Image (cartoon, rainbow, N blue to C red; front, top):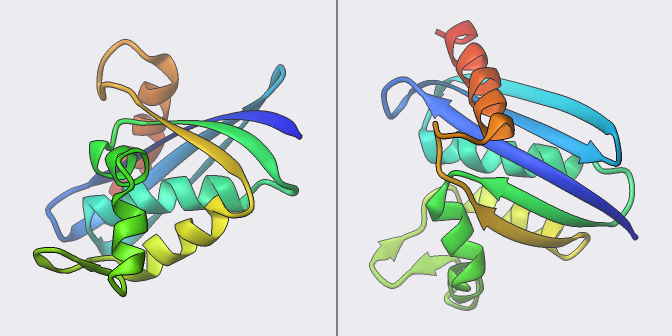
Length: 144
């Protein structure tokens, strides 16, 4: 199984507002940048779309080390919130789960790829996270 490293980030101006996401896929010495955006969205949707789009770009099942500055996404996976939401019919203890469509898509992808989620501090000293942020911001600005 190929070992891939992925970095992702999302950005939004207003919440909701124009937003963008960026991702970098690394395999050996090769790197691929991806990005996209929407005119009316939220920061969490952009963070999720960055992760989903990066995983969807993989052409075969892979072992993935995924780095994100979204504590929400990392905790949802690492602390097994996603499993609980799924068991509860895609609901949270406190009520509605937002972005169900994206969480369901991510759940499907996690059954294809072996993914470990790692949190990185945003806007700090990680050059890949900073590049993903620049990609996301460029897309956000493009969709204003």
